[in-house]
Image (cartoon, rainbow, N blue to C red):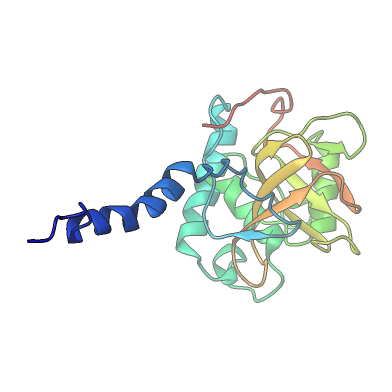
Length: 207
């Protein structure tokens, strides 16, 4: 009877598996990578967390805008049935719902349909801060852009800010209400509209 050499099927299987196990044990652990920075103008399908510590008016502005972003109503909802570019209509509607309505200087109503007229109204009522003035925008502010900028002649709300990087929500962006990533350093930013008097100095932090 021949002597066994200790190399039966079981031992051969263990030897064959050994290199694989060694490789698995020695494989480097992948470093945790930071999420890629959003590109300018990038649309986010999700509404970001509303910052904590906001004054009640600013919080109402953003919770109202969040509800409309989820519902995606037609532009005519915010324009009293009128078919027209409706970013300023959306801003007017949200401010009215939040309890700080605008007043159209021509009609006396709550809706100001034009970006330029809206900007003039905010300036005239002490609720506008020019870009480059040193004012640091706060969530709930309106961002106003000029023709030729990436957003075009446009107005929308600031939702979150981290340095110069901001997330906004506005109407009539591709005929929808969209959340978008932008930068305060982009050319064409005219300034910031305050949702109410005395609302320009609050502090906030994101959840």
